[in-house]
Length: 459
Ligand SMILES: C[S@@+](CC[C@H](N)C(=O)[O-])C[C@H]1O[C@@H](n2cnc3c(N)ncnc32)[C@H](O)[C@@H]1O
Image (cartoon, rainbow, N blue to C red; front, side):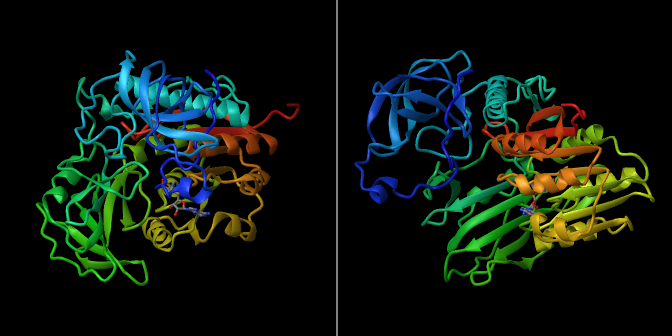
C-alpha cells in the first residue's frame, strides 16, 4: 500500500479558503484521474496530470473517474474533489442504496457506493497505513489479523443496509424541514428517511414534521429500554414548537444563553443496557451510537485486561462509567477503580451508575489535570478511551509511570491511536493484541481496541 498524505479536518464545514488566502479558487475545475489508495477521512488519493494531490470522495481505489474540485486554490498543498463520473468502476462498487447520497449531497455516509466487505477492507487499509506511517508498526507488530470486524448483528442480506444509528443529529432548513448536513457544509439535504438510522429513531418520524424556529433536532433511541428523546436547539430568538412525534418521547432543549441542556418534558436522560447493567446517560453525554458497540467493546477490553480479584484500575475518559463498572464487577469487593471524566453531567451519571460499587470513585476534570493530583502512584490495569484527539504524550507517560500490568486503549480515531502507540512504546509499553470493529457501517469511522503490556526489559 502506498503512503498518502492526510487531509486535515475532513468533517469540518468549509470556510472560503480561497478567499482567505487570496489565491485563485480552483473549485469547479475538472480532471480525469486514476484513483490511488484510500486515505483517512472517507476519500481516496489521486493526482492531477500536473501532480497536484486530490482527495476524492465517491470513488474507490483503482477506478478511472472524472472529478470536480470542491475545495482548494492554486498552490494549495492538496485539493478536495468529488468523482462526478465513473469511467472504469471498481469491482467493489455498488449502486448507492441511499437516494440522498452522492456528490454534493448528504455528508453523513462516505462509503454508500462500496460493498460492505469492501468498506471494511478500506477501513483496515486506513488503520494499517496510519499504524505504519505514524508509529512504524505493522499488523504483525500489534498482533492484529488485519481485518475490521463487523458487529455480529450487521450481517444483512446483499443490498440491505444495517440500521444501526441510535442517535441522529438532524439539521433544519429555513423552511423548517429536517434533513442532514451536506459534506463539509452548513447546507441541509432534506431527507424523508435515513437508511442507517435505528428503527427506534426512524419510528419517531422527525423528517415528517416541521420544525419552525429550530436549528437542530438530535433524536436518540436507547438500546435495551423504550426511552426516546429529542434534544432541540432553537434558532437565535426562536420559540420552542409544540413537539408531537409519532412515538412518546422526552423533549429537551439547549438554552440560547447558557448553551446547557434544559428539560421540557419527560426524562432528562435515556437508559441504555450493556454488560448486564442499566446506564443512565444524560442528554449531551457520551454513549456509543451503534447498539452493539458498548457490549462488544467491554467484552474485548475485559478479555484483554483479564482482571483479577482485588486489583486496582483506572478508567480514563470514563463517560458514564461503562468500563469502570465492568471492571468493578470483576475486581470484586477488594478491588478499586477510579474513573476520570471531564463532562459534569457525564461524571454525575457515572457516580449514579456506579453507586452500587463502594470501591469506585469518579473524579470530574480533565485527565491531564486530575491524574497528576490524585496521588496514585501505581495501578494494575488502565483503560483509556479518549476523544478523537487522543491522549497525548504527557498523559501516556503518566499512565506508563503507574506500571500497569495491562492497558486497554479504545480508539475512535486510527491516527490518534497510532501516535499514542508510538508514545507508549517510548514509555515501555508494546501492543499485546489489536482488534478493530466496524461500528459505523457506511461511514469511514471505526473503533479499535489495543491491549498493551510492558515491553520485555531488554527490548
Ligand atoms: C469516547 S468517550 C468514552 C466514554 C466511555 N468510555 C464510554 O465508552 O461510554 C470520551 C469521553 O471523554 C471525555 N473527555 C474528553 N476530553 C477529556 C479529557 N481531557 N479528560 C477527561 N475526559 C475527557 C468526554 O466527555 C467523553 O465522555
